[in-house]
Image 1 (spheres, helix red, strand yellow):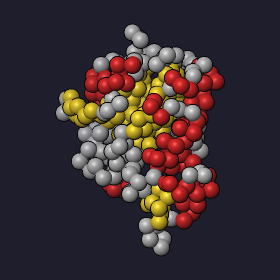
Image 2 (tube, rainbow, N blue to C red; image 1 turned 180 degrees about the vertical axis):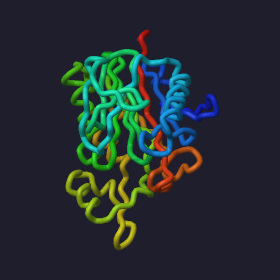
Image 3 (cartoon, rainbow, N blue to C red; image 1 turned 90 degrees about the vertical axis):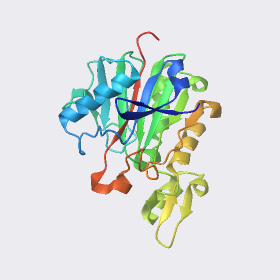
Image 4 (cartoon, helix red, strand yellow; image 1 turned 180 degrees about the horizontal axis):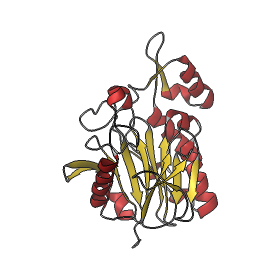
Length: 263
């Protein structure tokens, strides 16, 4: 599946046409907007940005939901639209949560990211979606695999049907850590030699994209159903926000997913 970048209302959006055709409306936002609850955008700006997002996607959802992200491995199943708490301008929120799964149609799931890894999961047979924020701490807790577990156990999904999309994230040459974090990855993953490189006497580089890919494959996702949008948030300064690059001036992008009523 190949991604495309399209512009609407002076905002660029990244999406995968084939995934849309399968029944999951979605997009990744870009540096053209900030949907961060606690970054530079104010309440009215965030509302306008979500209006532009839903205009691009082509559906105004009944409600939109997100986790109040804490870099955990926690994933919540939304079985009823009454779940969650209202939070400022941004629909409903689940506290201490970094991933959401649901089969409810015409609601939007949202995750926010700057360098962390957004993961979209979709079963086009059962019509179940997952929207995951995998920070480096969540990656260590295999949050993508946790989302798959919920899809299988609570919604009856079959592994061979699940489509996985790994969105833009900080690149393998850009995520620098010191020995404390490096050791956590080294101890957690038996493929650590494939994802860790030593940069100098102090710094190491970790490939979060490949780590998440291997976590999903080891869980049983078919390789032909796993797709990577190979864009580094750090390197693509004109297109994407980056926390590490922009520091206190960083903004947040969003991964937004909706199963429309007609599917």
